[in-house]
Image (cartoon, rainbow, N blue to C red):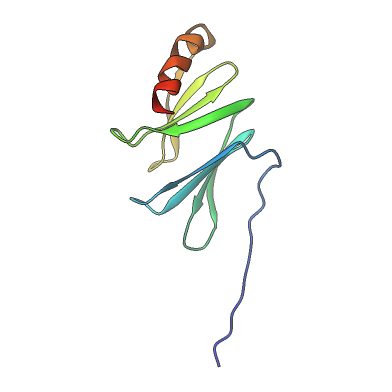
Length: 103
């Protein structure tokens, strides 16, 4: 008879948002860190240290992840799991309008 087993992952409390990427079968979850998780075995593949995350959104045109914090907007490539760019706090207020466009 088949044997079944289960496992789970642990992330920081205070989960803010979660998204699924069907192209590479990954999940991104943000709290005070951004986690990239393989959806087939729920293994954390990488963690990016961020602070005060309020929202994340995937741009469907360029497939980049935009993570809004109180001081920065981080532009993250979910395929390489690296920060591609950072928009500083002086530009965050203007870029919040861009986030509202997607919602």
